[in-house]
Amino acid sequence: MDSQALKVELLTKRKKAGDISDALGISKSAFYRKLKGETAFTQVEIVKIREILGITNERMIEIFFNEEVS
Image 1 (cartoon, one colour):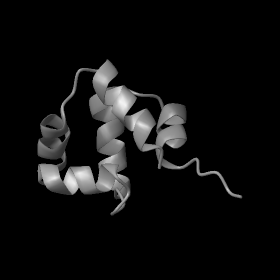
Image 2 (cartoon, rainbow, N blue to C red):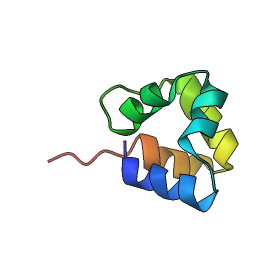
Image 3 (cartoon, rainbow, N blue to C red):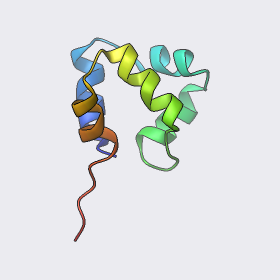
Image 4 (cartoon, one colour):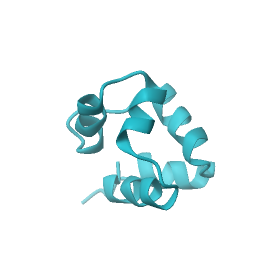
């Protein structure tokens, strides 16, 4: 997951961690753990984030599923 890209989307769309965590039904600390990559977002959470931020499926894939392999 590209946490920097997700942070950019949050800033661009003027959403706070509390907005997203409330919509996902998780605590802010749980959201921050997911944002840091300590735990993973579920598929349902990813779809909800896409809807909340109004991002395209392509952007969602860039943020959540594009991982560079060495």
